[in-house]
Length: 56
Ligand SMILES: [Zn+2]
Image 1 (cartoon, rainbow, N blue to C red):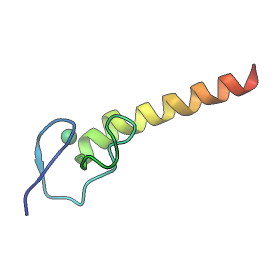
Image 2 (image 1 turned 180 degrees about the vertical axis):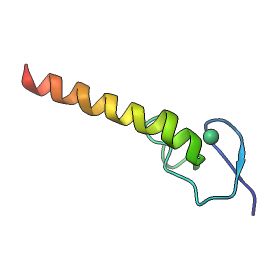
Image 3 (image 1 turned 60 degrees about the horizontal axis):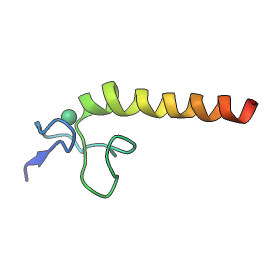
Image 4 (image 1 turned 120 degrees about the horizontal axis):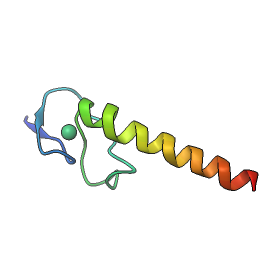
């Protein structure tokens, strides 16, 4: 079965990743490239912002 990345639209063969918070996690899966370059950095950014808010 072909899988298409929900973020970039590229076909991928790997299992896929949860695209949240770029896209709703229930909408589809994303490829490893998008996970590494887009999803993970955004998660880290959100985590940093949450930390800063808690410190104030
Ligand atoms: Zn992708």
